[in-house]
Length: 182
Image 1: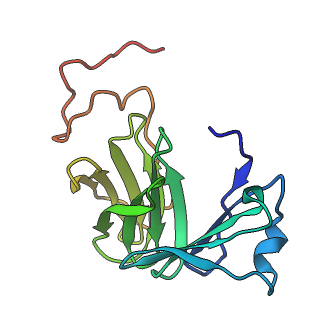
Image 2: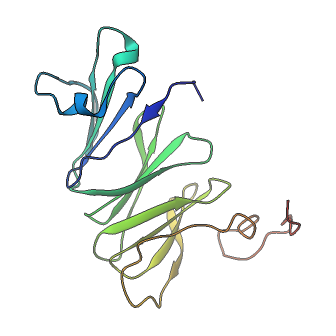
């Protein structure tokens, strides 16, 4: 929304994500040995480090999660939150502006492989090596539903944008549900 052309590459097999302005930086810049990062924020399970270039537009931000491999991430529809799933079996939700960890959930067992936000940003769905689809309520900080019956790992999840409006935390349609297609 700021007009900056940014990119979020993952370093395969690591717990690192990088954000940088693609107009002024290149992907190879994050691999250069001369780049040093300064600690910007630290939490129990993550560090956020910054490399400042000669100007703010050349800044590279490194999100270092102490979780092993990051499998997927997704921004909330309003871009205020970042959901990250990893091989350690955790969903971690960050407030993107404050860089605070605001919510977390553990899979039944095994790694979480995929993540998606509901169109209204109230729920996050994950899938993973536990063969389950799990719906997490960001507001309530709890699991609201688990889908069983998959015969193998769940590697992709999504919400149906036409049928996921008005769902309440108990799984029933709310009174104000809009059933008309846009």
